[in-house]
Image (cartoon, rainbow, N blue to C red; front, side, top):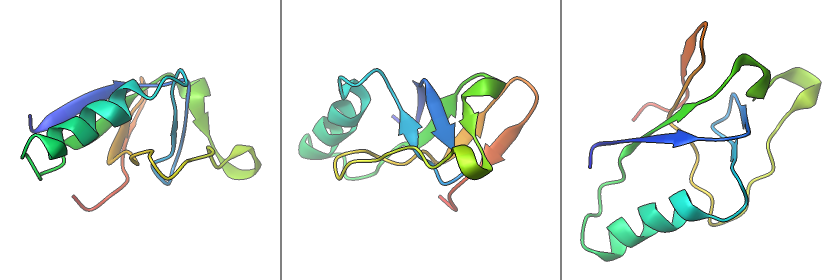
Length: 84
């Protein structure tokens, strides 16, 4: 898998993502690594304009097991977050 499209409730411009709280995508990416695929796929978050936390609204809280997003796609714009 080269690209993984990841939904979320909230995002920030540093790659932070707030999901549903079940850790599904983070566990899936980790299982890929344990299965021998050491390459992390490009993580592309998809959300609505209101889901982007900017300025005083952010950042999204992240835990040690959370994977940061590489790009964010919104209806009116897209943002590349990492250099991957």
